[in-house]
Image (tube, rainbow, N blue to C red):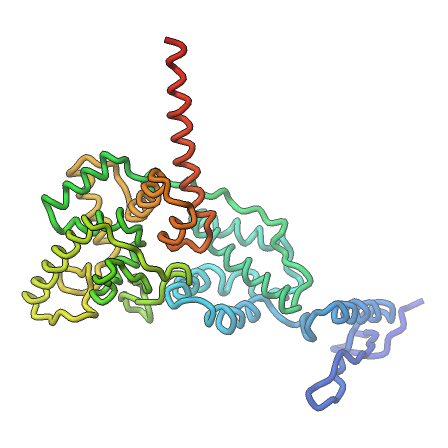
Length: 378
């Protein structure tokens, strides 16, 4: 016996049922129609939809495509909640890797872990593991929002397997004490190297150091006021420095200056004033502490090359600016500075980040302690 139908669309017969799924601002009912090849199928679709609404999903959840939903979330939710530099970095990942991907035209409710896994595997054929994991961070935040906003019951990412993260490079390891001494010697030979000694004894991030202005130095209290960061980024097709607030709320901090470093800093600033004078640029409280040869923000690539040349000249293991910051934290740990104090000086948003460095130092100390027991075998 053929299934009973009650409507016809494009010469195809269907059974249609209608349900009130909500009310508009004027109190008028919002109705939705459900179709099936039989009454039973149509009613099953209706009941499933109404059950999802009952469980808290937003009306119209079944219509949203991944592309439309992600775009709206990115501009309306993510953008106002992050700094300009973070937004530009996220926008680059979104524009190049996520927007227009194979998931874009799919209904949000139809996306399963297998779809996302396939998407990630495709990215991995063209990009690095780090790039894929960066895309995953965005996807994670998006799907968490969808659950929070009652658009989805749960995230499909739970069963997705990420590619293994690359091992941390040895260039992010802290410098040895003898290498710090070599770095200090380099300043005597070449005053332009001061920024690297400054990083070792203040722990500032690269962008924080490059954004420092003369007014950020509180000479009366002998502290550095850290409140902003700078990074060169491509904005609207132009590669330019982008100044933004400090990385996190905890990144805004006051870092005391060691007396010996304070003397070097004063000498450095005097040289900066002389450079500004030669360039015909007025030195003001807003002038940069570590400017380029033309008195503007220095680029990270320029700084990396300078550090690389310095390492080769003084036989220091190849290192990075971040490792200089890491060295600062390691020095604090070796001097038994309390973990919470070190975390505040570093501007870490999570004390666990600082604890990892402290644990590594503790492990080294324990190893040296055990090695002292070798006397019993002599």
